[in-house]
Amino acid sequence: MPKSFKKELPESQVTPDPALEKRRRRDFTTEYKIRIVAEADACKHGQLTQLLRREKLYSSQVIQWRKELESGNTDKLAKTAPGPKAKLGPEQKEIMRLEKRVKRLERELDISNSCIELQKKAFRILDLQSSENEQ
Image (cartoon, rainbow, N blue to C red):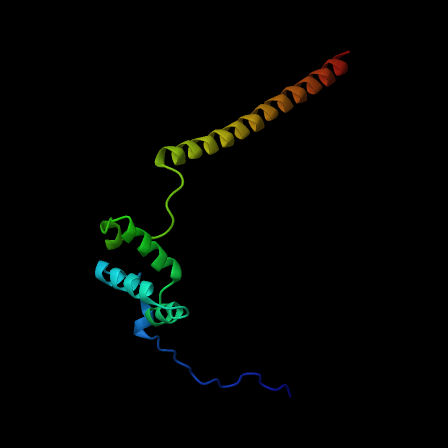
């Protein structure tokens, strides 16, 4: 008699942590950025990493904030745009899209022309066979 492979598995219910449900980008105020840059400048050798770990920051953030402060433009400190800047403008994107479309249409035209040439050859062959049969 075959054994039953069904085993009773306990129901496991996973409850998600509400704090991790919706992650969002951290926003730093201008005052916070100025304070962190001042603290980073006051740090001695080896203390900067402790500051970065405590505040959960990257060194590149502090470097960028420092550059923005040195330029004298505190408006940049208020809000930074997420992600890398677009390399292509809207006109270049449109040109690339149109060039891609032109290539696709040229390929379709080549296929259509090849089909027409094939039909011409087939009609010539059929015409030759029909003329041989008449003779």
